[in-house]
Image (cartoon, rainbow, N blue to C red; front, side, top):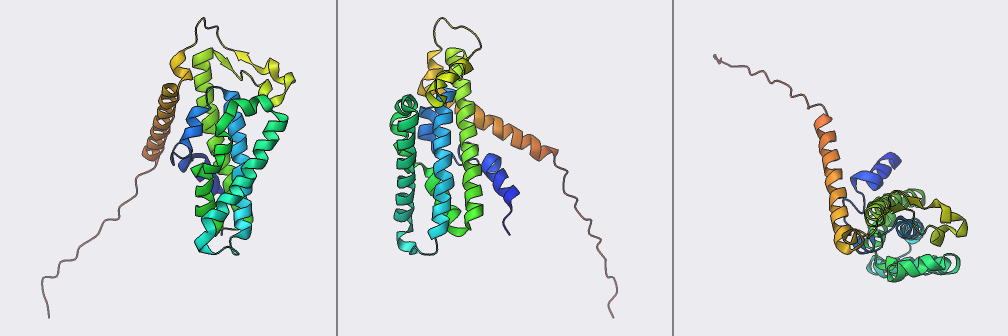
Length: 231
């Protein structure tokens, strides 16, 4: 029986693709200079994850095991192309901001990893749920890291949100403080690595606190009987 609660916990926390599996780090580190870019790439990855898991689960019994990986990659590539065309049509400026990392979702290890490890062994509903939880977990890491870097580098949140949501979203930008000069290291790859390291350290501290808060297992005392006389 599928345990949906366990699937959710694995995707969001215990086996989070960004914090624990450390998969898909190239786009995760490259496009998180702003929250808007992080949300855009996160949603694109989530959609591809859910539908690739669904299609892989649907065809898993018809594909010979020897050629399953090329078939999975073809399914993922078709979905990425569809998402790429949709973003190009409806959010062109975001499409330009994400650049090469949008088509590179095809090679994202998170997606091919879930197709092979989960969707190829489970039914459609549980595979879709697994893709959803893994996608949300990955997107949350992108957004938190994007927020951390954008606040430090520009003093804003949701800058450029009109690229994702249209002209009405220009007022969503939050100016937390004014910076005469940008904090350059937060905008560059070293800032992404430092932020990612802090997030991983935070998760490890929380996990350690949770483990320490658990009650210690009780050890049953064993009573030994000594035999002094035989026969």
